[in-house]
Image (cartoon, rainbow, N blue to C red; front, side):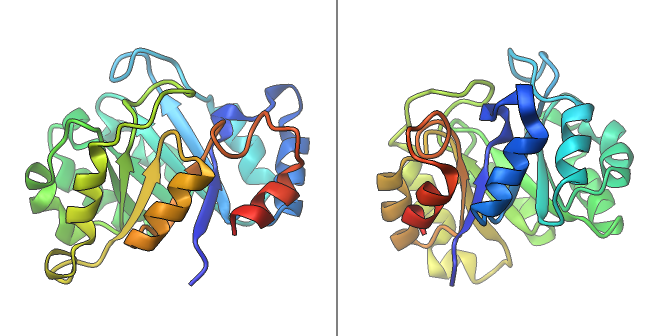
Length: 216
């Protein structure tokens, strides 16, 4: 099965965002990953609604939003109206994460949870019955260009273990310092999707099409 390769659009060239999407479309990426940050849940501000609007307007492919914001339940309707395909929330940012995830699914949008390096599998287990995706953060969220945290691999292994995963119906994606070497290793483990930033896609000498073909 082909792996899902999603450019992290916070790393793209914002001076010409529509053209960036065109070049990524030509490279046959699987879709687009949008980081939304409020400066509260994480110590940084992320992409804006206008950026999301430009990306959504210029592609028919999958667009996900990773909500690194407090109280995401207040904004689910807004992102649903913008035509996104997957919404990720952090369980720690929401008073009633199960209710918010159910709201996402009721809008015919795939529901996902993003788990920080310090979030254990045991704490999210009650939510696994109602999600479609788990995005494992392999860096602490909020900034591009960080170092991969090797200890997170144990958590990925636990989520992919047959005896555990067979109880649920989710796909595992990873986000943070995802290099070609990491893709090779994690693909073998069973990870299905990869968010691509500066470690593998952006700010390279090769064009996007050559890079994506190489990763595939």
